Image 1 (cartoon, rainbow, N blue to C red):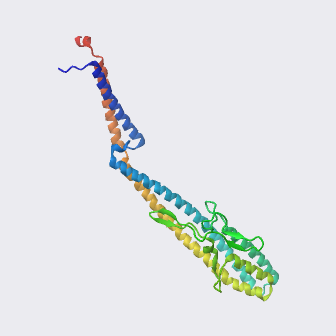
Image 2 (cartoon, rainbow, N blue to C red; image 1 turned 90 degrees about the horizontal axis):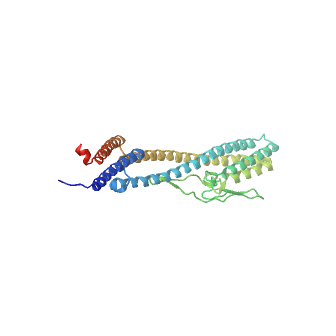
Length: 306
């Protein structure tokens, strides 16, 4: 016969009930959180994989922010390209009108005034701001893309020569915009580098001078404006392909995040049906153990004699 002291009985019973209660609480936490792992030691392999998934999520979050910023900047640029194309088209209409022999010097002077306004508006677009508040066409520069001499009105590009690409995931990167020269500069008929701002200024000056030279300058300006228009629309086409590529990469990231979520559920997620079943079983055992403890604790010699 094995003798069990009252103290040992209470200690063993308390330990057993405490263990059952702790296991029940753990199951309740798993149901609440949806996760079955509390510590890495619960499943070292699954825990290691979950850490890798966490890292993938953090990297994906950075790629997502980069892509969103790039997309915003490209959309700003796309809108500016559209407006620039409209302005250059209007300038071409004016140049064609000025080249007409029936146009008077007074009318050409009026055309020159409108061309000056278009030039100022184009400069405003070139010095527009992107999503970060930097010059839209200034490359990496924080200030304006073009500096205008207050005395002569000459516009000089003061941005950087290039614009750094940004990572958008899977080892891919994208240039989130254009520099000013990539959009507004071109080579003239003599092979020299110029830009739309200088050419519009020169055309305006020639029109104000009047005479046959003004008409000749207007005819020459048509070629310049066609070249400038082509430069802007080409840049807009390239930009459209970048936006399309961003959309593809966004879809890939979305699919990858869904895969990560599914794998996280498999590796560390709690099966709610199974966990709830185990919890119900554990609560039943706990209730039975507590009831047994109460009954046994109330037993004494007198009750046995009765």
